[in-house]
Length: 114
Image (cartoon, rainbow, N blue to C red; front, side, top):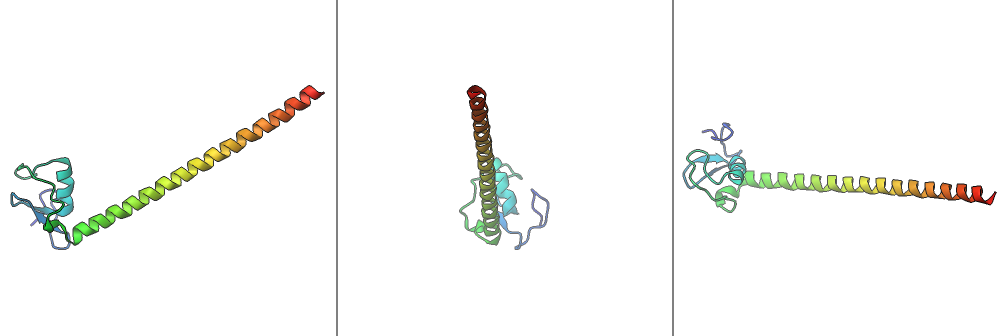
């Protein structure tokens, strides 16, 4: 049997779920679909997002959650790196402006004391 969304074979390893309308899908495929569209892609029967159904609490969903956690951690680290880079650039600009002001102060002091 193949998934009507991605057309790939459905197996225990890839994870499957059956909606209330009796259509079967890969868990990842139907979750992505139902987030965007509240109906079955085959018969258009209105569906609830089955995030708490037992059929979704298997290895494929846990794998998906692990992927999301890894992606979240990566994005947090990337955001921290971006923030650190912005801080360093800000610090460098601050030091540069301070140095320019010190040089200008010495220049004008020397100019007016002569």
